[in-house]
Amino acid sequence: MEDDFDLVLRYFESKESAATNPAAGSDRFATLSTDEIQGKLDAAIPPNTRRKELWAVRIFDQWFEQRHNRILHGDTTGLLVLKERHEWNACDWNYLLKMFILEVRKVDGTKYNATTLRDIFSMMQHYLQYTLKKELNLWKDAACRDARMALDAAMKEATREGLVPGTNASSPIPATLEEELWQKGRLATTSPKLLLFTLVFYLGKQFALREGTELHGLRYSCEIQLQHEDGQELLVYCENRATKTKNAGIKRRFVPLKTVKASHTADHDRCLPCIYKLYVDKRPENCTVQNLFLVWMRSDASIQQGRWYQNAPVGRHSLDGIVRELTAPLTGVTERYTNQSLRKTCASTLHRAGFAREDIARVTGHSSTAIERYIQFDVQDHVKVSHALQSGGQSSSLSIDTEPERSVEAMEQSNVVTANPAKKMRLNINGNTNTVEIVFE
Image 1 (tube, rainbow, N blue to C red):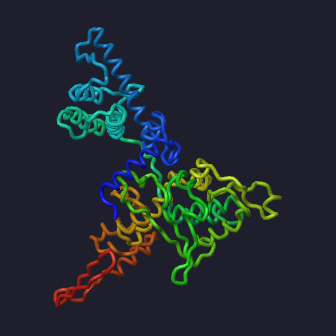
Image 2 (cartoon, rainbow, N blue to C red):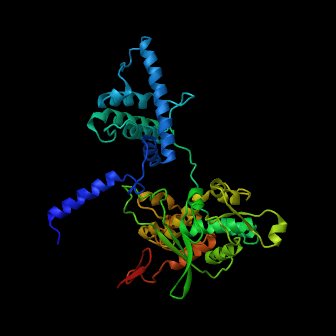
């Protein structure tokens, strides 16, 4: 058995051998330049965050230059800051951001809404932390209290004046619209384009997928696979790469990746495993493209020969606009539908079916309270609310039909009417899943 002296001697001999033979082990570690390392650090910041930061800093620079020139020309309403920006301390940033938030305006001179003001403030915090490398927290440090109070006052003032952000969010796809898409041939499996569009539609709805970036990242026989469990064939989706909310960074290191399974349904045309198997059968043999979605053939001759798809992936922007292209030609559609609508449809449908929010989050992949924004009411939910309010809460768990006459009739039949209420009283307590009947003699 070697003693400590022998171990130390062997260590220095190995170090000397490596020094005399520089080629030994030279391929083990990567050698990066300063620019390459900085590029790695910059890549950790999402592109949208970087663009919003540049936008906010550009507005701040324009405001600072204008106010600086006004002070030089005799304006006495503010203080002149002559130090370089990297020399500004917490007091300087507190004073300047306080003035900036209260004075910032759009190009046309109008005020920003409350949401935009908060975004600007947040991006200035990001600019201080990641670009200027400042150990300054605008949201918590006591030295920045005035800047936070100015933001709070500006947001409240903008809201009182009716400056609210525009409603550009997408809406869940109701069941009636999905049925109309099938009836009008917008969803089908009879052509290469329609088959791919239908597959994207139901993959997004079943697995709560996001925009074109996540769809474009799907690889054939990788994230989505057919498996057999307990004698049933299931289409299984497993997250195995970084997504928007699960980037495997320091903050999201232990967030579990979701796994969702889709089983066969009675309706063969709308069965997701059946649609997927049909699409896989139409993929070209010896396909060298790893992407799941391939460009469809447009010539009738190729389609008649059984060649439905090319050996090339569909672009990200093309995938991102599929739901919009499906719903745009339909008359009477006033809501905004995008690929994000499929994710909201998944969350809203599961919530309507009685699933708990924790179970819904396992399907959608949410790891915070952001799932609340995806659970939205449809027409039937509003009808239930109206009847519950009109009847004093007696029909809170009643399944309401969209036809008013049938709804009222069903509600009247659900109410228990006693012949002699003075002698016997019967009370129904309706919950989310059960109904308890209490009889008082």
